[in-house]
Length: 377
Image (cartoon, rainbow, N blue to C red):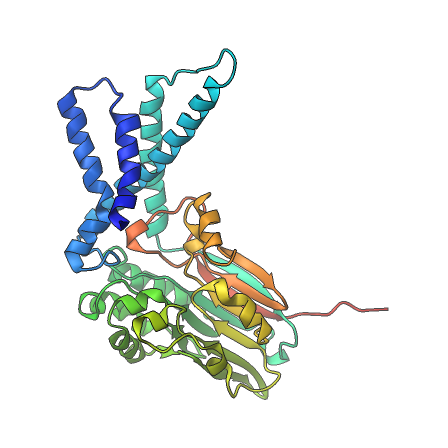
């Protein structure tokens, strides 16, 4: 069913864009076959590795598949819009506007160009984004405290060791107090990804590197990956917390497992366990891969929740659908009760849909500031 759904836009493109072209039958048939092959990228990925989430092809082929798949997706959307306009025109007196053949060539060219831009935006090392978050009752020792959020790295055949090494170098150059990674670090088995995650060993921050699992960790040898992350020097916050200190001042850093964890027979997402025993009155920063449980975190007194998972929605328009699947949250900062939720667009994204048109990837440096209450007369 999964592969059929992704094949439908391709069949639509073949029927409404390709077949009306004045080309020889043999040429149209060859192009149709190529389009069908490209549309089944996820099927070929599953055959290559046993999972649609880990395409084990050369990087150039992964990029080519994403470009072709993206062009089909965008072209289907464009043609659907034109078909709707044409249909509406038939209802207008004197309407029934014909669709010039040149428009089919133009939309195909535009779709291929936009897809190329989308892939380029997806695979780059992300630029820095600075975010300031005000927290009520933030201790003076943490006013101006900086942390770097990385998330959704999806280290894979698309995001190789060279990409990871550059992300680490840029991260370390920022000189932040703390680095947090909010899940989905990898796509693939430990044996396949060992060399590509190795540069993460060099991540450095005075208060350490802390991470939580995302949903993709549960697709690939969860226990082995958690042990390996620890061996790389990254501390795992799975339904637990640590206390950050500046002299007598304290901030709680808590982390939970992914909302999907119990489906894989792993410890379920447990916010109560993560906060158990936390110092009373200390502001709480929560790492939770998916943002949709933010209201519950706010009700527990969390001051700041850092999430990822949505990839920012990837494409303008598609982001509205992604938001609906994530409690209305998709990108950037939200006020949820008295809590700030920050949903990161992602350091990278899943290689099965490596397209970005609009929502950019980001290295996110967050500066904490004490919230000043307005004076009342």
